[in-house]
Length: 127
Image 1: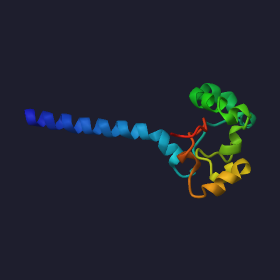
Image 2: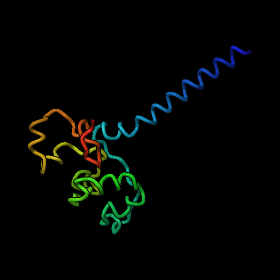
Image 3: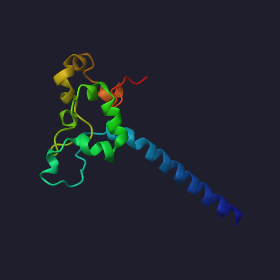
Image 4: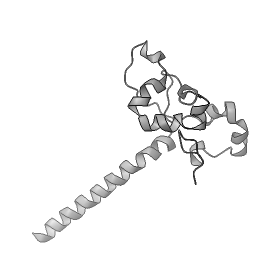
């Protein structure tokens, strides 16, 4: 009976470890994943015209603060310029969205996704 309990504990521990690692990897998966559409809560037609930051300052305050205190936040580069409008929203912006201002870097690093060097929303260089 003791062996069965030890096996159950080992299986439970392995499952818990796997789940923990999976959950920790999720922020990286969002930025490293393809450009699939993610669902946004339903908004009225009027709410769709509200600036993203108006809601996200409360809904996702850490992401809002990262952006707000970044170079892009200071320059008032709005969310839709990278992530699209309500109708075309993507979690992981395409490199082409950055080309408007950063064409030189896209030529310098043609095969490197931006998030490999820059932390999303803070835009600081990863060390």
